[in-house]
Amino acid sequence: MLKCRARRWQVGFSAHRSDGAAVSEPPPHNLTVPDTLAARPWDARRGVPIPPVSVHERDGSTVVDFVTVNGPIALSLARARDCSLCGQAIGYWVAFLGGPASHAQRRYLDPPAHPECMLAAVRLCPFIALRHHRRAPEHRVGPDTASPPGYEHGQPDQWLLGITRRYRVEIQDDIAVYLPAAFKRPRTFDYDAAGHVREQPGTMVEA
Image (cartoon, rainbow, N blue to C red; front, side, top):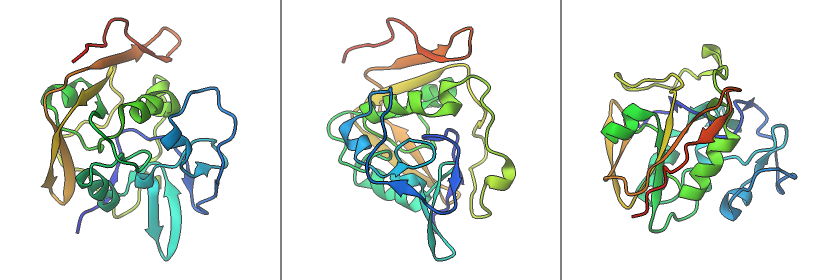
């Protein structure tokens, strides 16, 4: 059985909503969010959309957990070529986000998404948006989570958003690993002196 796993970056804010509370309409937000992502249920306390990979069934209840990826849902979406953040069909271009090592090796634990949705996640996720953001404590990670050996889970100095056309999936130790084809349009993000994420100028390369 495919496992859930502790994610290397959390879409939205690191909040385990044991009650699964959400609202049907997004609150006002100062960030531009793609329509498909805005159409998702929103976390009522944190004011961010809830990705399908953050929804879990535990002890007969539906819970929202931004710290853990729902492995079976993530794999199902990836195999259908649907976005892991909004749940809709991806289309021609597909995006992956990670540190320099994942980008160079083209091996990811986080599933693919629309480029626009992934770009929104860069601004919405505090683990990405804020340097030295505190990760969720270990007790928040469920007992059914796991990660394959050899993967770095710390916050990198740079984030690279790679855009490609194709990808494939491997199952390693009951965990899905996502392997994109060569990237066509990389975008690089680092941190300013205040610790806020910023895009490096001139990193957009047209296909």
